[in-house]
Every structure is written in structure tokens, then in C-alpha cells.
Image: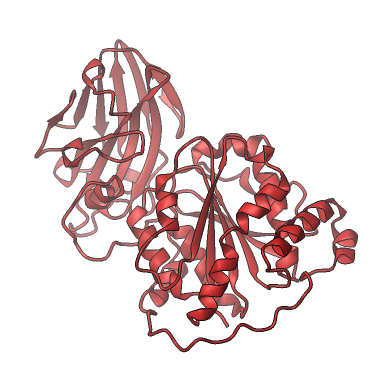
Length: 437
């Protein structure tokens, strides 16, 4: 029996020629197989890096029917990985993958046969990356991905940087909750003319929650509370009120950060910041991967070991930002809050839904929400850097910093200084533009 990979798992490949065959119960006429050659930044070098029925060969990668053959020695050094994709034309009536016809992949390489049966696709996916063949320390490996979109091969191509004809507004990612999609639609048209400048309200010269209350309710957070207060004071925003959100990446590559306690530490650090900005002592908490996996909260009574308890039952997934961002917007608007929101959005990878993320960040720039993206790991997350300088926004509503391979090794003071680097400037610009009052 061939060894089977679990989602997120990987296996070494011998050198030479490898083939990946995609099988499914869906009619062959309704689904296509293709490959995408990707550089280290996760994007194509050019449009020719899409291998499909109209362009069946490129740099050692050849499509034949429902099989992709990869001649590993012939693949240029500039190609870091090759994504194997199955897709259904989203314009066909009711055309999307279902649990009954979820495609499977079989990899044959040098006498080794490996299989991957992804978890059933249930979110109306029309294009999926099944597996990817990638370089690691001079050798080739295969990884089981099982990541899907509901925008078909055109949406997938756009995500990887391939130029496609504009087919109109991008559809919401498959896992976006209905309520969150409605919130995003409500945001999109809200680009009204900027009103007259409104003076900032006088700041309240104190933290939202007193030291005494933190000492009584959560003595373990006192040092974090004090460190955050120092950073707020240095940036001139002590006394500012804001609802603090925490969004955590739950893609497969994040497992080590959960296992070693880094994510629990981050949650406690964000809670220490929150009690300086919001007097309710509650941080809305969201886990995301392909979509929103869980919405919960973090507070002074439940924070100890909270992250392990919440994430343990969740499946590991891929990386899509827009569903989580829509969920934050939806939650914030439902609260009727008058104070702005400060969102700590943590991730270790670039998203599959880049276009939807950019469009959502632009449309959300008229809302009193600041997005502070925090990158974990060794990757150079160029897409996150691009969000920091994204054009066509009412105000610059996002910041980014790379926390590195060992985020837990950073001091609390350093983390808070970096979190607060751009938030004060946004407060000034947002007040001037009438986004906050």
C-alpha cells in the first residue's frame, strides 16, 4: 500500500522524474489539472509559469491529461516550488467540488508512490492546490496542501501573480461567514466625501483599567500591563481608548509556535496591552486558516492556558486573510463601539487571497479600525510589507513588523514599542479625515 500523507505533511522525493496524477469522481470535462511554477516569494516569474492545457510545458514541467510530470533536474534554480492544482470552471451551473468528488493526488517518483486524500471540500471550492513539490536544503520534497478557493483558476492565478483578464469584483473566499460577507458589502460603498476636520477629544490621562484591578484579577499580567503602559506613554497615547482584537494564524506551518507556547505568550501580551486601552478586560480572539476557524474571547479570568484549550480541536489549514478581516469588521460593527479598534493580526505566511485582502483593506480605510500585522518566522513577507504602503486608501490604516523566527525571545517592551509604532500616527490622520471623532 502506498504511504498516505496527512494534510500539512511532507515526504522526501528521490531525484529524477516525478509524476503527480489527480483523480476524482467529477467528470473530466468539468475539471482541469494544471501546475504553477513559483519563486521563493510565492509568485510566478511570468505568465508562462502556469502550465495548463493551452501551455502544457515549461522548464521541466509537463502536463499530460490529468498527470503533471516534473523532471526535477531540469527545473531551474529560480523555481522554488511547483503547485499542483485541480479546478472547475466556476461559470458552469452549480460547479464546485463537493465531499463526494474531492480530488486526490498520487505521486510516483523513483519507485516511491505517495498518496494524498485531502479532507472533503465543503466550502464551494472551485480551485484547489492539492500538493506542492518544493526545494528544501538542496533536496526535493512533496507537501500535502489541500487549500481551496471559490474563484476558480482565475482567482488562483491572480493569487500567484499571473495576469488575467478582469472578470469583475473578486468573490469572497469560500470560508467567509455569511454575516461577515454582508459586513464587507456594507463597508465597500462607504467611500463618501471626507467631512470637515473635527478636533480630537481631550485625552483621558490614565490607563483604561487601574493597576489595582489588574493586581486583584490577574496578578500574572501586572508586568505586561506596566510594560505596555510605558510604550503608550512614550508614543503619547496614554489614556487613549480602543477595543483590542487578536487574530491568530492557524495554518499548518504555525504548529510549532503553538506547541512551544509562543502563541499563548502573544495572547497574554495583547491582553496586557488591552487593559491599558479598554476597561472591559476582554479581547475578542479569532483563529483563521482557509477561513475563520473559531471566534472566542480572552479575559483576565480565563487567559491561563486559553490558547491551547481553544486551538487543540481545530484542524490545520491554509492561509486566507480576508475572511478573518471581515469577521473583525462584522464583530466591531455589531458592538456599536464608539472608540476605535486596534487589531493585532498575526501570521507566518502570505495569503492565497491577496486581491480580496487588498480590496478589503482599502474599503475598510473609512472605518475606525487599525490593522497591525505581525509576521512570524523567517520568511520575507513581502505582501504584508506592501499592505503597509497600499495606495487608494482614505487613511493609512495598517502597520507591519516582522517578529522573526523566535518571537517569544523578544522583550515585552520591544513588542509593545513595535505594536505602537504606527497606531498614534493613524489616530491623528483618522481624526483629521473624520474617520474617528
